[in-house]
Image (tube, rainbow, N blue to C red; front, side, top):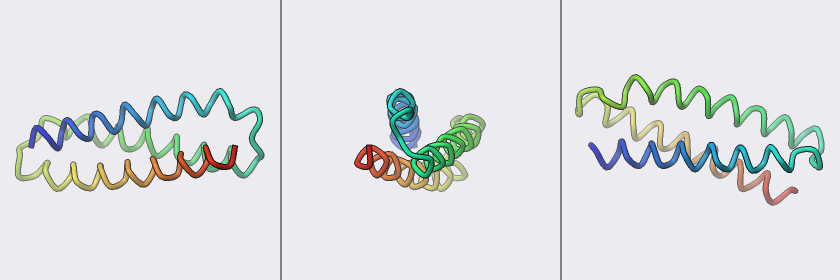
Length: 87
């Protein structure tokens, strides 16, 4: 469980870093790319809101939640890679 919690926390940190780095480059991006960035940024905020109250939850309940959060985070990470490629 602690590995899952650590992995999700690490993933959120990476997502926030990539979001912030891309924000700097956004002035060069087209409207479609900016909309995708905004969508992903909103999802990071939602992911973090879901993560915070569950990070200390009981192992049985939280394990499935952490797996789902990790999957969602990985999806967003792939979205950031796609945006980065388009810049």
